[in-house]
Image (cartoon, rainbow, N blue to C red; front, side):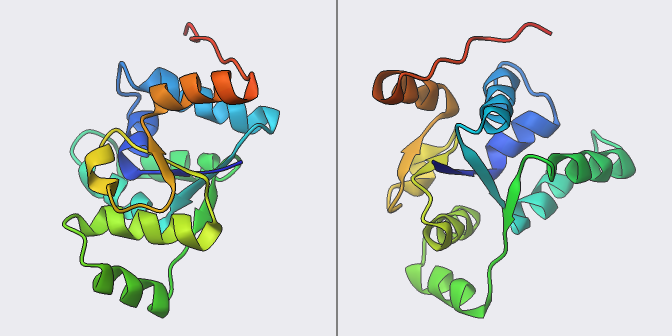
Length: 148
């Protein structure tokens, strides 16, 4: 199943933000097991760098981005995608760009901690924690909490 990750979920992963990091890391494990295909918008990476600029060394963050390409697929948007996003006129343009990627990929899910930004989404929008409950009941897939 294709899963589009919103920027806030990626920030949780790269910044190791608790209590959300656990769910973000479990998504990576799901990818390793082949249970999901994780996607991110290329735009999310610049947004993450901007948000974390004061807390994280830029070179270390770029190295983390590079490492994440082993398990994350990246969606780029083109002229028509940008035009469609502008015409959609969502309140939060960044969310609209994530939605455009989800449409382009035919993603089944968008995972975000800000579901209110995706009320017009064509994909099923869930918080990562809700996603794990959903896949447990729907597909019989269980991922426990990981201790570090």
